[in-house]
Image (cartoon, rainbow, N blue to C red; front, side, top):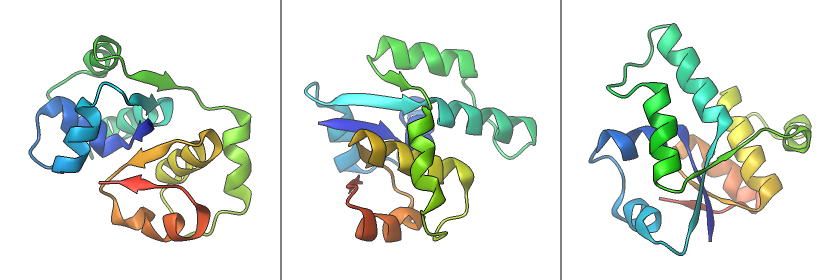
Length: 131
């Protein structure tokens, strides 16, 4: 199964947070799953650090290395990922989350997220959220 880690999922994974659900941990540890982190998450983290909304013990460079070491593929943003944004309802106004959802939908990837703001999108658009 292909899984896209939401930004908070990525941070909590490598921070060793107990906020990850047991299901999320199990899916991340399942070697049969193909895990992805979006470049959108790195963009979101960089902006939130620069405006003081996020502090992390890990550097972004370390986060990228941990992705690589753990076999998590970085998903680039493609123009096709933005097409859905034209018609996506504004249940959730966060541009990073909206683009992550669009990437998951475009790529046929399940989204590994505890963000309840995503829930209306899953009901309408056929993307599966795992948490």
